[in-house]
Amino acid sequence: MTLLSEEEVSLQLTTLPKWKRIDSKWIECRFRFKEFLDGIAFVNQIASLAEKENHHPFFNIQYKMVIVSLTSWSENGLTELDFKLAREIEDLFDAE
Image (cartoon, rainbow, N blue to C red):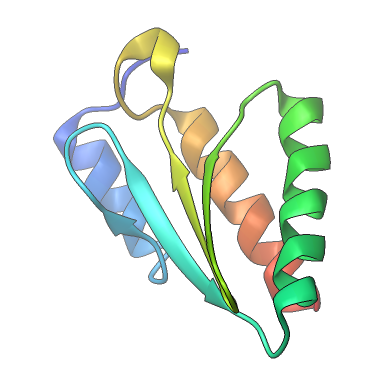
């Protein structure tokens, strides 16, 4: 994995408008659900994806909202893998 430049991160974010840059190392997205258990099921689906990719997000579960944060620890910042997983997570949410 290679650390993305500031320009590359900005370009990637234009294709993922729901995701926001938190700082130079993190991107984040908030997903809202009708029911608490819908959010928990979503987290479990993401966990399966994360295991396949061997790339594990941070989760913050706040009742009917799930906040997903991504970074690449090995590179101390954002890589293509973060954006690949972000797209897969968004696809999961859109399929719900």
